[in-house]
Amino acid sequence: MHVIETGNTAAALAVKLAGAQVVAAYPITPQTPLTEKLSEYIEAGEMDARYVPVESEHSALGVCIAASSAGARAFTATSANGLLYMHEQVHWAAGARLPLVMCVANRAVGAPWNIWNDHQDSISQRDTGWIQMYCCDHQQIIDDTLKAFRVAEATSIPVMVCYDGYLLSHTYMPFAIPDEDQVAEFLPPFRPSYALDPGSPANLNTVTLPEVRLDVNGELAHGYMEIRYLLQEDLRNAVQVVEETDAAYQAIFGRGGAPLVEPYRCDDAEYVVVGMGSITYQLRDVIETLRAEGHRIGVLGVRLYRPFPDAAVAAAVRGARGVFVMEKALSYGYEGALCSDLKSALYDHLGELGTAPSVKGLVAGIGGREIRTADLADALRSGLAGSVPDPNWIGIQL
Amino acid sequence: MGPRGYRYKTSHSQPGPGDGGATGSWRVQRPVIDLARCTPAKRGKEACFACWLYCPDVVVSRTIPPQIDYEYCKGCGICAEECPTGAIEMVDESAAHEHED
Ligand code: SF4
Ligand code: SF4
Image (cartoon, rainbow over all chains, first blue to last red; front, side, top):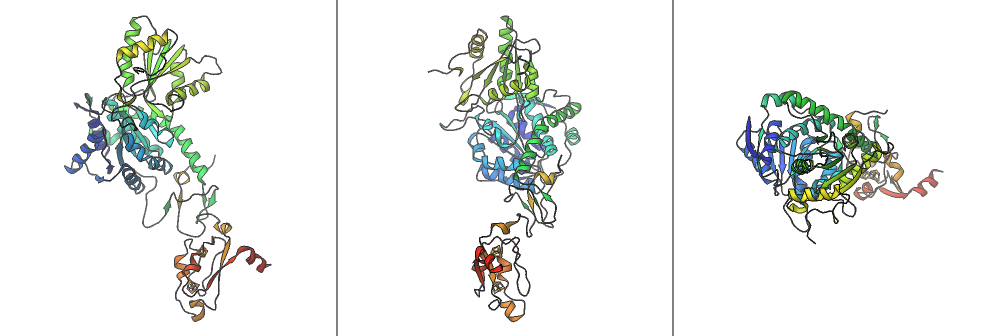
């Protein structure tokens, strides 16, 4: 069935279809309508779940951590400073290997206070050990959120599904709602790898020593370092799990095929613009304009940001002369995080060949600054002519 | 490649001595029970056992007399603090070793 609805509704429908059993969230713009929808579904009996109202985002994720530890499929959602407020628990959920799903309606972080879109909130959670997916439209929001539950449960790693606040969360677009029976086939009920059991009491994640030890039963128990190494190993392997999950989804629903990176007119491209989220679809228009002017240019949307699909990113821009990275976030004091990640992938995969393209970072839409298609085109034209604008923040007025 | 099952990827521990490692090596002071003042030891009956109840590492036995497993006793002194008869003295480890020698 197709509907015309908001991005937040797309996320809520996915959570309902996924049969999340516990939802705990604190309202924050622009995520609020998503959690309101979920509480409506639960209140109306359309969704068999427990909605736990909490006094903060830190508690929201705390509830989800507890619910997941007890073997329930759990979901939360937030934005901006709400995500920052839960940061400690964000690390915790990954270290505890709990397969939670969280939607992030991306919003700029304070100070100064701002409710509009950029990616600083979720990018600043890059190093927490979560899987991060970035959606470009409403269909991807509903599809990715469903896939996120399966990926999380297959890897025992929590997944963050990120989509642009307002630009996607509040706009209306047509999208297909997956059929309930097919979802049941794709996502069977959650079978936890471990669940708290009063019959066999245990402490989870208490002080864990630097060294390995024998536990009370005389069996090997890992130290902190082994546990953290296995998170890293499983995250790196999760690239493949994301691909397999997408293939399974595509086989049932007929949508997907580009879960890591989504190239648009990159095959013959001399230049590639790389970005994440809705801006990559806006860039498709820009690219058409520039192509009409004779430039061989394409767009690469990075759909999976963590684990970073370095090989896929490098392969997608291999052969290009130049790459422009268009970002809505920064590692303050250096450059955009995606720009650094991409350079590092090129160094690893193309460095020896001496074929790595030049890379230039551009920043756009910080704090919801209007991203005018004409400005994007102008910035790229000057980049194609040899130098990106200085400063490289598109639309800045200084 | 070492073990990769879920239990190896997470930190679990069960109540029992030693699941926090060989915590006896942390000890600076050692609790020593004076049996002449310890209620169950004196009466030969199950009684008191406040030390058994309060020990956070479950290393005091509920026996007559109570016994402390020094392999895991971390020397926190809670048992000495809680003992209603003042039967437990915290003795410097160095002094305890000299005594043993
Ligand atoms: S000193 Fe602490 S750890 Fe040792 S027996 Fe007493 S209460 Fe237990
Ligand atoms: S608390 Fe003191 S008196 Fe009571 S059993 Fe322990 S050592 Fe004996």
